[in-house]
Image 1 (cartoon, rainbow, N blue to C red):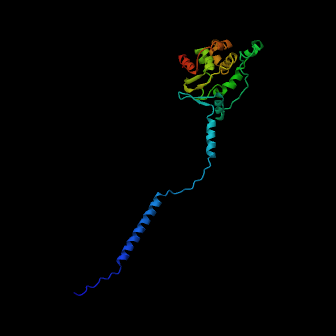
Image 2: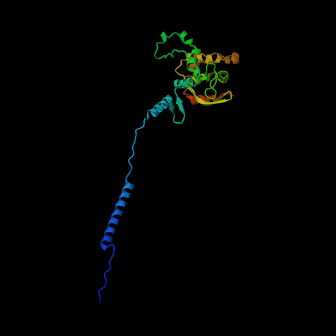
Image 3: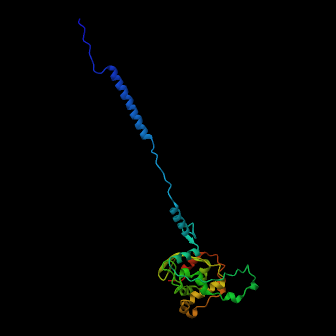
Length: 250
């Protein structure tokens, strides 16, 4: 038989194998590169920020909260001195007067105390230093914040003369209504004032805005003994509020 002619190819079998090997290796390189890009976390650049302004605002806010004490029932108690500062900050003009501190009978020799000096306590000066910041110089108070005394002291005296003493000795906390306006705040207690000083400031509030004139002969000025008679009550501000609810007030 004649010899069959041998087939001739343009690309040899060896070249085809090499192409497959090169292509496979290339695919592996591409896959590894993609995996590297996916799993590599980009490195960012961070710059420290200036927080001095934030700290200043925080310090200012904390300073404004100074003097407040949160109570367990959700209420808050404010230091009376800080309360007066807040009132001044909101544009209330105040006139302050120096008041001599109350005499502590346990720390001073009773024979060395001049009884006439104690009896002549200045109710006007005590009011200016202790009461005016909230109740104002004319006794009108601040609507919705601090109740008026002018025109209301006569009502309280007529209902119970001892009630004004009790308010100053034990404070008052809770909602009250005065002249048709509701108030819900805290009246601090002033037990540190002497009996004569409390009597003097109550007499001042009775005569300064003609409340005593409204009562006429029914008004008898307060005496230190009237205050002393109320000091032994085991009362707090809430008890004074409860007592107010018992009085014949409109």
